[in-house]
Length: 252
Image (cartoon, rainbow, N blue to C red):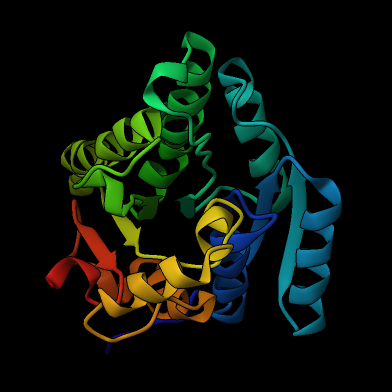
């Protein structure tokens, strides 16, 4: 029987202080997982934990900066100390500095590529051994429309998200035979801090909605179903896939 229940599972969600990561954490908790919300902003993380607990879920906040790649091994160990070994990793933390191409510096390039592409791999690498022992695990990355197409003022971001698509396939090739499925969600336009510049322009936002097959932009609740599906045993035979969650934006 197909099951979407996550009872008995432990999930770690990065970038969980707001936007997509916060919504994913809430969805996983509603499905029964114990959830660790990881991000830089402790106050926002605790607010999200309070919301989850008020609804009967189990969650804890972990304030850390994944941009410091040298700290990732320690971050992973402390995450595993909270509820035990991690079963489900959601690599949702990300940054888009939106710089014109001529203004991209080595520092801004490294900031973007380290957080968006290097951190997901090295964090997963730390958590995979415990998943191997269980013979089951899930890694869910966040890709982007820019994994496949170019947007203005986003060279490092686009490069990182193109990399996420291939990283997801490479992770799947390396780990799926061990019971660890690796997939990515590629969101369309959702109201988040990263898309605030877009949502501040009503005419542009309306035009983007018209470009979707459904006729509207995304709402954070639209993330719930796919997030829980990919995290659960219902997706046992799906791995190495980048799934567009974009209302048909890429279909037109």
